Image 1 (tube, rainbow, N blue to C red):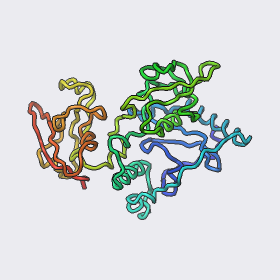
Image 2: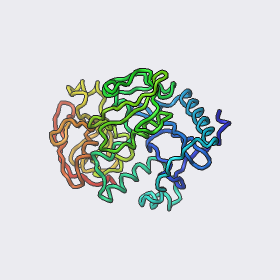
Image 3: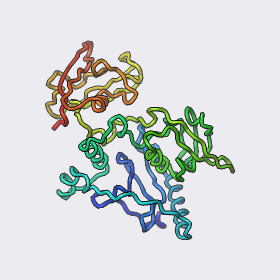
Image 4: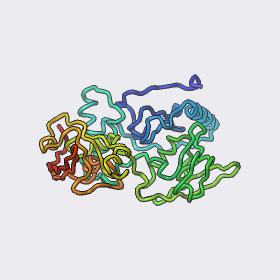
Length: 336
């Protein structure tokens, strides 16, 4: 099947219009299926918090390639409507990327664009840390799970999806009125929904019937484990330590709820203010200024980035063996 395509592997984004070729920056692999005019037929890729390859397998890739060929035939027959192209944007348009990568002749990698988005917005004072960082939502937050080997067929429906009338084995065909052909298309459509949206229309094919159903969006439906994302790592302030969020079973062993704060301090790399205040590798941080949980994250260092500013002095509540400690230090913008 691949012999019917001209395949191009891009490992350096320096000359790529990332405004047009917009995608999740924190992935292992992503594909655009398009024509010679750079009209994008569909996307392939995407992931969830659990794994980089949750939605990647041979069957779904073959299905996407076949859909690409079918859409190209429609294009050749004059039946394809090209979408308006987004305003061009290149890595050189991000000041830090231009200075540190492009001007130095270094490769520009995907995650650098995600970090560049955060730094540009934060420098301009336009970043809402509690809203703008949540990108490429997890469809499970809508109560939807897919069998991607069968395309966009629903294998499980709960919560908001079930209340909207979606059913197991429904085939998703559109999101917010836009046709979708793959999981990556679906996730991209959800990503582009207005932040203030309270519902989303999802079109499905159920046997021979086409339906349009409205799914209500809960307040924090976009929230994912943002600690893995480059846009968060570029955010100021720096929490003054690096840490690993504990698994649910580890929290239970410490007597903590599943959604409570808990992370193990793993490294410092440099002599941070946290280290100077007495924080050690292996310490368990379970609260920040007395706050022990948040609907946005279960990771204390992420909570600090979201809710504090450079120069603030949070107090961390720490368990070290049988000791319980309180450590206070000033937050810097960056570790170095």
